[in-house]
Length: 210
Image 1 (tube, rainbow, N blue to C red):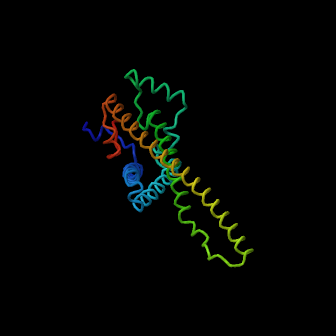
Image 2 (cartoon, rainbow, N blue to C red):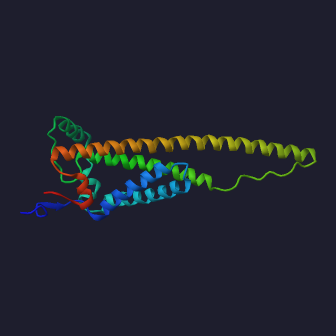
Image 3 (cartoon, helix red, strand yellow):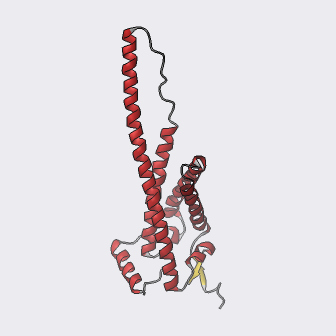
């Protein structure tokens, strides 16, 4: 029996395309940052579209792509992590409990990243601030104008505070996602070694050992 006959199809083409597109999209967005705002924004919208697709595909996709296949109770996740430490974890054809939990965390963290980014972009393009006119010589009109300007200034201050908070939250989610990515890579390498199979290759070919 050759290697191809000993393998079975696990990851469908859309899951694999999503996975590697998300890797590229996230790192382009993370590396571009404020220096390449247009590229950063474009990559952010690509990641948003990918997330929407994955959420839908998690309910209507192929067997191992569905959330019901890889989201496990906390007790089972903890038990798997303990077996991982002991060096004798159970092998799963799809995502193992720890991998499933990591995917959920990544989806939540990425959703937080794109949500804050979209709100920031919407605020930046909401429209121009009220224009200021020349001071009217009439005292009562001048007083009214000053009051309007003071209110506008206070409003701008509040908006700046909100924008700063959103920016900090956006950066937190982005950096937290990056941390999760590194943990995910470490988990893939450990699982590949313990089970004697190349999980990176499996996400390229879609096939795993039966």
